[in-house]
Length: 455
Image 1 (tube, one colour):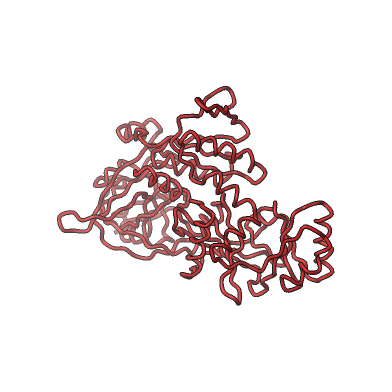
Image 2 (cartoon, rainbow, N blue to C red; image 1 turned 30 degrees about the vertical axis):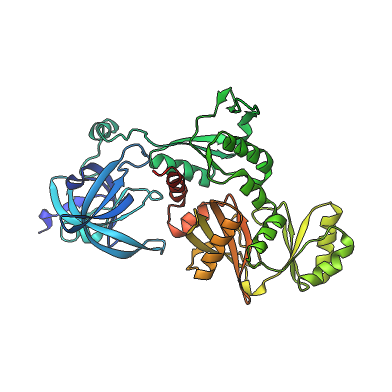
């Protein structure tokens, strides 16, 4: 019986003839029950009165140009728990796997594995009775060369027939920016990173232009995704307005970004839309400090710089004396501040709802580090998946519409009075929410652009 089994290393190349996949690298993992294959654009359909599913796969890691269009009989849809504890509904297909000279049928789930090291995971159910694993070895059945891969997939190169999309931002190495670039390229679009500092513009009634350092004219874009850091708000929004003047679709408009960055104005807009916030006070003179503190219910209270971001410029004043000192210190520097009631029962937790095109696509709970009251991920806060209530979803969507944003991170806090809105962020980070939920948020942003162009 032993001699009939295939011996595999911890990594092997296999193929799926019925799916048209000549070879794909798999992680051989006896610790995983179910096999999984990377898939995007997953869609069930009926074929000959039977349930099928079609999907696309980029079979070569770090190669987003090579794409295979697949379809297979649909055998199930089940909840699968990932190694990180995340539960996900997945479609299950059955197809034949070919490893070496041996072929047999296996079941696989379909899921986006962009964040994983392998496009394919071979689990123990598929190997049971057929395979022995030597974890110290790799590629016992051979490994294709780069030239071999090119030859095998020479007819699978996808011509770029998508949109020309620019990502207007400051740091190309930032996780969020890299993911958006990858997601756009994955979906067949021509992506360009546009550094805000390297753009300049020509204001002219007849021939308005945007130039890039070196003289290149940037007038032929279909869409722009503005990801403007707070310190670049003025210039970044000026550039976004110029793209809008050129009839380029901007995922968030300059006016929406501008008003979202003005904390006082944004809170006024939200209140005008009937959205509850923590009681907030604003005054110009230090002479009004005492009444300002009373207005929000006394200490402890939160003092916020209007220009602050990512939790910076936010101070918890635990006593009235401390509150007076902080407020007067900021006022002596001519800084504009908000004073806000402290929601003690939130216990250092808030909810981040990620809204795209009028829909909450993902939500996480952020929890502050011990001894800290700010739950921002940038300040060491942790993220976990949470099921938000219908009311919290309604608030997030309503707030995004009130700010006229297509993409927003909406922060909500749970209080004894019910959910209260803290802030609406027009350039929300992706790392914390994608890492916690395993959802392709960057891909959802690209889909929102495609929807505008009816692709």
